[in-house]
Length: 68
Image 1 (spheres, rainbow, N blue to C red):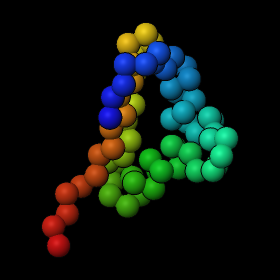
Image 2: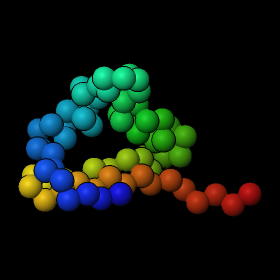
Image 3: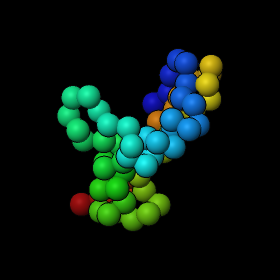
Image 4: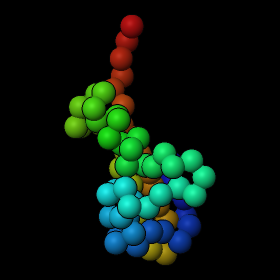
């Protein structure tokens, strides 16, 4: 998912990845979800965020395709 919003500063983005930025409502952070995906499916999966201040942000969630 992408937007053309204000973007996220690299230092703030690093804090998000480290789990230092917490949600005001639920307490289930992006870092927690990312770690759970990695535990279940492996290190090559998870959440990535690419952002450039003034240009926008892209969030990707990589999960394996499992047929069953």
